[in-house]
Image (cartoon, rainbow, N blue to C red):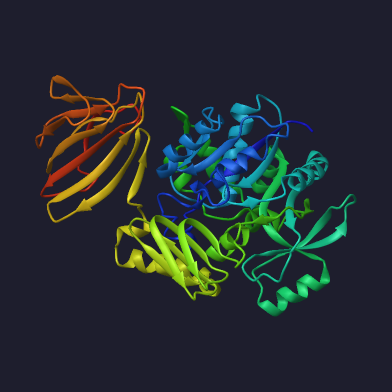
Length: 473
């Protein structure tokens, strides 16, 4: 196979997997099936394909999560494109294609393998075989989409109806179809002419851009303007914000695939799931003899076919059937598996009530490590802070709060005005309101400390940064 550039779409909020998935920590960054997150698994299953460094496209707010997950699997190479705001798949893929042609391909016209970062594929050999099958058509200038051979009547997916045979198990695309009702989905299953729309593609960068320019020149022009003035920042590629924000929001299906005469569908039967609900997470999870899928400390009595996730402490069920129970540090979800798709309505309600639980976990990840909000009141907040070896928080001050740090393990360098203090276990320091300060871990092991904040306003936006190695000024 010729070399291929993977373009990984890592946007989206995954609201149907709340409370494990939050707006600032969506499902593509979760470990739902195995030791790797969905994003990491998406990249690792490409190891047996001749690919160059991937392009990962994500939201600005997720940049450090993406960078850390790529670094962990040795896939980080200044290859993360940051979208100032979500504009759906047609513009995102156009940005990936333009940058691939400009910077990565070095004068070549590469094949782009467009994948979502939040899918599960259990049969990787079948997946790779389908990609190899599609490569021949992509080289000929076809825009290939992968159609998932349906295993049951599904009303939660869009469908692709195949047209005439193109040879070697590939077909022209007759049309794309929106999510059907159950009876129609049953008819599709019986006909053997319909596939689930996977949202995965393979085509030459230039061919996609040619078709986009033909059918949606407004999107093409906006994306071209957005990449004409890109800036690099550590491992990130930043677009021209004004140009990209002027772009229409549109899917690749509506913008290109429904109009082009070059669309080809390659069937794929590879244990695919978009894990779009807790019931689909139950589908892909190992189960006990009673059909229960368990994560964490779980105890069942006369319970069957449940999905139970216990993040802290024990979760016990008695006589429970076909139910989802997800317990995190700050929220508990109990839902019928049949109504799992409606979890997103809970998220919508949380947004309307302006509650933080739709957006934040109690644990929040930062480029230097993470913090866990342990307790809070009207004028105080307690956090457990973890700083990775060699990392340093920004030099900063606060207008409305003072802080008290107690080192639990590791070593801390604390910069307080013009002095440096070296603290070890059981030592503490007080940071008065308005004092310029910074925290660094100079050691070889993680630094753990307890932070007690007190003051009239404790929001995360009460930070004035003077210096920051992560580009957050």
